[in-house]
Length: 308
Image 1 (cartoon, rainbow, N blue to C red):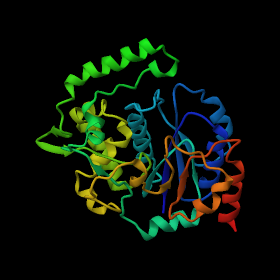
Image 2 (cartoon, rainbow, N blue to C red):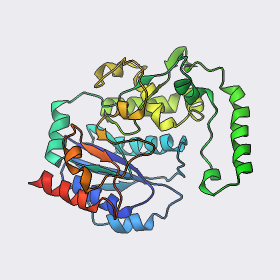
Image 3 (cartoon, rainbow, N blue to C red):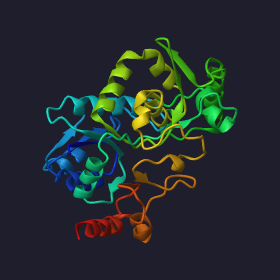
Image 4 (cartoon, one colour):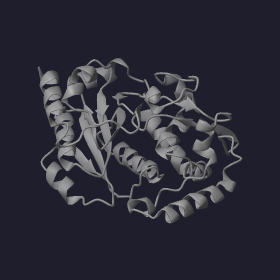
C-alpha cells in the first residue's frame, strides 16, 4: 500500500520533522508538505533535510484561517503527488499539528483491508432552514488577506463585518445549491482531514480544473476547506464508497470526523500526556492537535506504545 500524506503547515518544524520521520520510515509512505508562504521555509528544510520521501510543494501560497487558499494548497499537493511516478494508492490530508497514534504497519494494513473506501464524510446543509447551517453559505466570507493578522480597532473590525454583510447581497439568497454544466451540487461540510483513493483524487483535481463557477462560489463560503471537497464527493457516485453517506445533518464538526480524533469545546484542544489512555482507546489513526513543549511526553508515550 503506497500512501501519500499531504501536510499543510505553517509552524512547529520540529513536530513536522517528527511526524515525517515516523511515517516515511515505512517503504510505502511519502509526505508532501506545503509551508505557508507567510512562514519562513528554511527551518522546515533544515528539520526535514535528512528524511527520505519528503517532498516540498512546487509552489507556495499564503494561507489564512478560514480562507479558500487552503483548498488551493491542497489541490496543489494532490496534483504533485498524483504526478509522482511512485503511483500512490491513497492520499491522506493532515494539518500541521496532527500526530499518528498507530504504527506504520497498522496504518498500511488499515487501508489494505478497506481498499476502495473513501474516508470523507459529509453533512448535507443545502436548502436548510436552520440558520446555523445556512449562514455557512449565505453570509459572504472573505479571509484570504492580511486583515486578521494584525490587531484592529473595534471600528475597523465593525467596518470589516459591515463590508462582508453588504457583500452578502450576492449570497444571502443562496439555498446552498451550486449550478454548473447542467448539474446541481448541494453543499456539504465536514472535517478538513480526510483520506481518499487515487481515483477520487484524480476526479477532484479534474473537477477543480473544470468547474470555475463552483470554485468561485466556494471562495466565499465559511471555512471552504470544510465544504469544498465534501461537496464534490457527496454529489458524485464516489459517495457510495464513503465510510458513511446520506447522513442526516447534525451539529458540530466533531460529529463528522474521519480518521482523526479531536476535541472542539470552544477551540481545538491541545492534547497532553493526561489524555493518553483516552486517545489510545479511540478507533482512529491520528489525533489533532499536539504542540512542542506541551505534548512532548504524550508523543513519546504514543511512540513507545505503538513500537512495543
